[in-house]
Image (cartoon, rainbow, N blue to C red; front, side):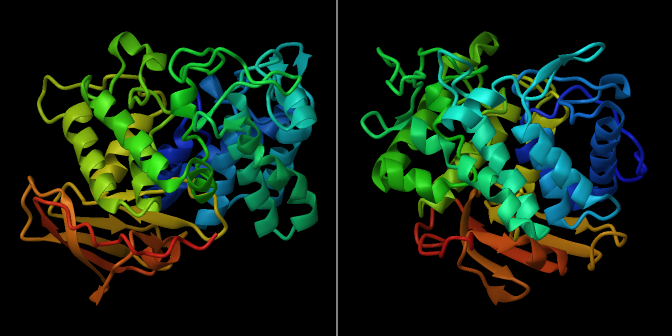
Length: 416
């Protein structure tokens, strides 16, 4: 990728869902592409006055409620991508989050359509906007706060950090789900986690997991046992249709990998002390949703390369649930899909040149981590830091056909 696209402007159609897929992959293995994407957004902002939702034909495009540029800018800076004005990215990000939208001749609607009601209520009432934007805006606000704080703007970033807790206002302890709430503060009734409306290309069941920046908080609100049981049940249900929604009717399943709403879902078991379930379901999605033969195809929306990027990351056994937007990023682990892989780093951005991921006595039918070693030392946690990865070295696995329930189960959580 870095040889195909030099640091120049890149057009595209949308940033939707790229925080779990395209952003981390480019930041890690093609930072010149990440730099081009960032420069494109900043150039559009300088020319038009707004961050866009994508850049088809290198023109401003705004999709109502789309916040994808915000984690893209934050993750690039926090990953260590060099060559852009991080202060300008921070100011543009805060502006998008806090400035009321408006109609601009030649551009259409600019800004976040549901932004004003989100700022007023600190959630998006379903009678005033899209209920799912509470979750989308909350995560975006957290990414903005992380970017600002990393640049020393803790006071200015405080409102964005406060807004990142918006999910708590729409989480219903009684149902264990995020749930639409009216402007009066009353819950929408009746409620069904699959069929209740108000969620963009999804449903409450899927958006319940859309708290990628505060999985420990979500797990505490649900209760660990209910968290694991609900999530595992969703995978069992989705497996009946190869984790894809028939006819791309994304809102009819508790989980789907044909769209970007819940691409992080299998990795959440790691956070709950059940890494063997992360290993089980990531391998199942790789084998059944993506497949192996010429007859297999993507059963959903590829968008900007989001599904392809997920496949590459999951095959390497790497993922970032929070999109790499924390100030000290981490990579979450699962069993890799190949015997060995060598990551080549761009010396213009990162200190090391390579990092090797290898499986001892590889067997394609072995999906469960038995043991792991980082740079020759035993590794008992299901995550490594971005810094550890970029220093170069190796990650060696021993895999087996059955779960080793003790590996990673007693790991500390990554530092906040």
